Image 1 (cartoon, rainbow, N blue to C red):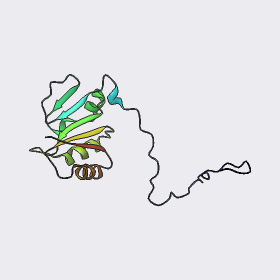
Image 2: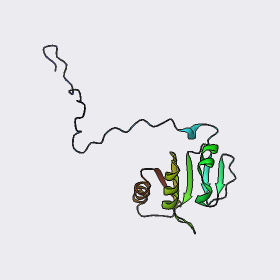
Image 3: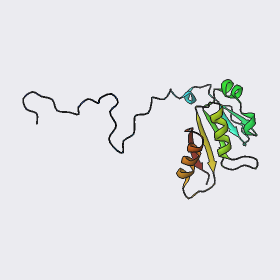
Image 4: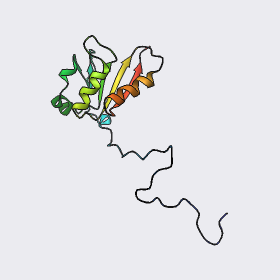
Length: 135
């Protein structure tokens, strides 16, 4: 109940004021996902692809700045483990290229896929990572 015509609410935040314990600062707004654009291409690493909106490559070294720019890729799909590389290598490589999309990692049945996702993300400096468990 309000009395005396005064509005009650939270006081305005002061510049430089620390957040309450346990609260995170707001994330900056993300750019609109270019993956929703009809001409965005997905890069599939280590997989054959017949999809028209997908480019298949065989090694992480084949992904370079020119390929990312020409395809405007917002997703790269790779296996958790391959014969010559793993998802950590791919994540680090994409980060070094300034990739700002999502790395989708296809994994075998794992007891805790979110933990693997966090580890890859942390090792790659915050790259967006999604681990998908194959049945």
